[in-house]
Image (cartoon, rainbow, N blue to C red; front, side):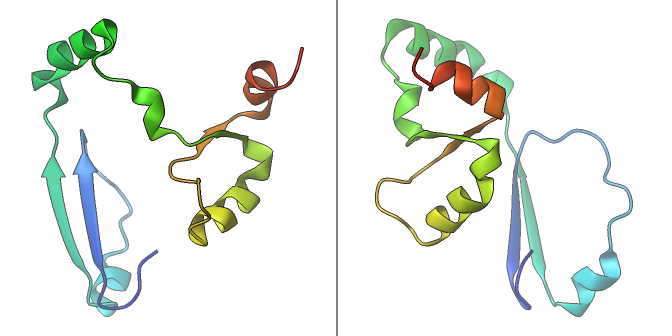
Length: 103
């Protein structure tokens, strides 16, 4: 979803083709689309070494876990830029309950 005259940026490691793309809707909204290929294989070794040595702590990227059943509430809080909600980790309910619920 994007507003009229908006911009879409696709950044990642994409392979293959996208079928059934609605080019008419894209044109009617006067959108701009850009893409950039990420080359993750170039950095795998360096990233894994940094993770294993403790130089990088990836958990700081995730503000807190939430169950999938609360997704609407989480999106609402995230949309309102609620303090402390930077990058929520959405988990299937059964995994969330195994990881977070008291034993």
